[in-house]
Length: 173
Image (cartoon, rainbow, N blue to C red; front, side, top):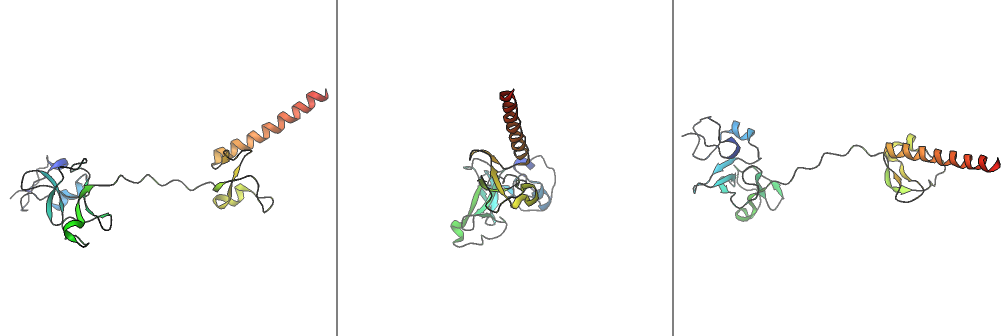
């Protein structure tokens, strides 16, 4: 018997002595989805789940992103093994894989919602690093929580002071 590859691996010409509707392990690693693509006895597209080929016909993602999902632990499981949770008959079923998590954010510049004044006296945001409280500049919504915002805030305060001095000199003249 030849290995049958459905979905993204349909063009593969690899052959091996596997039961009908099964994909060779080497091909399974190359599959687009985490579950092994197969074809049900009725000829419908499916994935391996609970040691059998289960149809994915009603799933919006089809075979490409379908996984064998354990509804008790809310995690994908190996479709070539019996469902680990009880009751097995209703615990594992094909489901669309959850969307991938967004990439981790870089380490924050500061923490918190923003404070107008440090209660410990003089403190340096640059020396304390990410464990320091964020600074709110003049209004609560102007939180200096990135290095660029902090630099812009420093430049803005310097410009305000320079403008105040220019107004004083202009008035005195």
